[in-house]
Image (cartoon, rainbow, N blue to C red; front, side, top):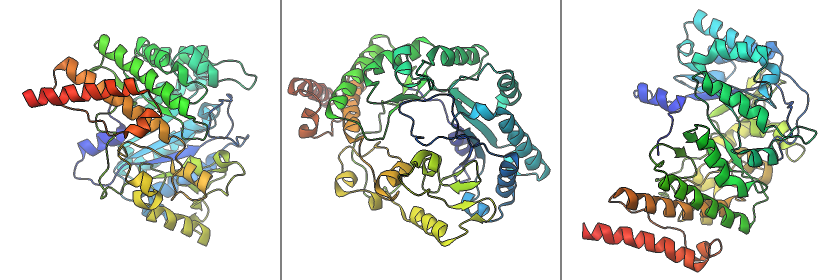
Length: 437
């Protein structure tokens, strides 16, 4: 499976002598949205909008490194400037002014980011055909990572991504996505799988392939609500995807993030890296100029469940008081071991298990304690990956084995014994073939 190279990875490849990872800075230009998606993690949207002076101050501090910004951002070789909402295109004129100001100032200062930057926007597509949006996209398309969220086919998309009156949004979103692709531009994808739409997963992915997408990012939500039967459903949905890819010789040409050759096995105890970048690898600014490790720590995401997890503000800088200093100290101390129970840390399929540090904070009151509501979904993915890769190796006569690391007890909670026996037989066949060779 091929995967489109991300901007940060491209920078690392082109400049191998630089060990620092490219940072992402997120501007929440508004917390308002013209959709009301059922699975949205932003549970406390409002009508706030960022003032240009607020964004201008942030750009100045990023480029100068003053007020703790330089220490926090580090020697980032490039920068990703991301715009998010709510719906970011509701503030397209503000976004355009921010981009213009960043370009002007970085060139004036002869800053390395003048050449090494990218603007990033993920939109719901409702305002895509607005003349102001079209003007912006044309102006910045050479330094822009842009995507419209399409949750696969119409049934899956419209089951969750609706307007405030409950009306669907698929037809509007797909029209924008197809127009962007027809103009010769790359369109990223993001399928969000939630309990209310999981039965559409195969049809959604098949539909995305039919539309010409060859890089399909799909993920299950981290939030509470998953039940055992959802894991069973995900396994069989992924099995159908596997058969479709193999029967139509698409395995080499289509990347689907649900499948990975390197995941679903034990992790080394020495591997202490945090999956999520929300522990100091990113910076996010809300409309009022408060600073966070990620948008998930903002009050628009937390609601009243937790105090906003701030690390500074644009007037006083980063780590301007004891609370912010303690928050940063907490983030700096987080390791995979510190936030994991023994069950998680020594899990036989720990590789590839993902989590959101901001959601950890929302659920447990600290980012240093993992929320595990999606654990069963990871187990289901592991089983489906053994099925896919074993069949793929067999079809392509590849001398490899994709090992099953899911304990039998776990597997039988998701699939019946005859299905597990079938998966094990695929693995045994691969081992026998290796022995003969």
